[in-house]
Amino acid sequence: MFSALRVLGSQGRQYIVDVRQAQLNGFRGRPVITQRPCAPDCNACVASCPTAAITQAPLALDLGRCVFCGECALACPEGKIGFTTDYRMASGRRDTLVVREAHAEPPAVDVSAALKKLFGRSLKMRSVSTGGCNACELELNALGNVNFDLGRYGIEFVASPRHADALVLSGPLTRNMGEALDLCYAGMPEPRFVISVGACAISGGLYDGSPALEREFLSRFTPSLYVPGCPPHPLTFVNGILDLLGIALPARG
Image (cartoon, rainbow, N blue to C red; front, side):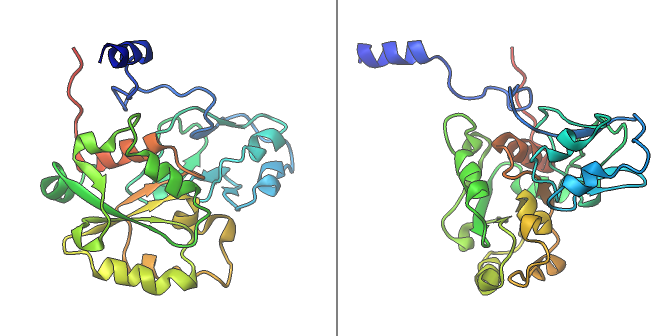
């Protein structure tokens, strides 16, 4: 027993006490676009983007399409695009994922009074990967480890859609997964809602336009929360879902 206590003492506190204030080093997070003028006739950032996340006139970057490769920041001769370490990028609306010039604030997630009333104390989620590379799924799995410990807020993943309140959708939505996705959502009891995780789920990502995709599901069921990234950091998901459900963290003394 004393040996175990010595190990605990040497390791200290492993979990993130305050997920709202956690600091990340070396993390490529929310991009910003400065007000510096672009070089004449320059489209280097647009040409460098593999997912057409950047548009011009005016310059804007879609977090729902961005894979955070950083190529745009490297290609821009004026240093107009940069990346912060901010992981707060989730949004309750698709349109607010678009970053524009001098827009320094992260996307907003408005509290859903209806979802807070129903699931503010307990939320069960079913994860479905629709043809993804497994990166998003690995980060979702990390939500249950000792560092992020999503379960402390009454939020956890379940093995059956019959026990789930929310469908956590990852991957680009391939045709081969279409029937399985429909069956999963049909098996979830009402009320229920959808969370789109990662660039692939939000926009198709690198696979957008492929004939192997069938994304009609999202036209029938609009997500209540968008969690951008490739893959998203667990803290992006944690903060997004806490905001959506209006879960306030206890004050630290």
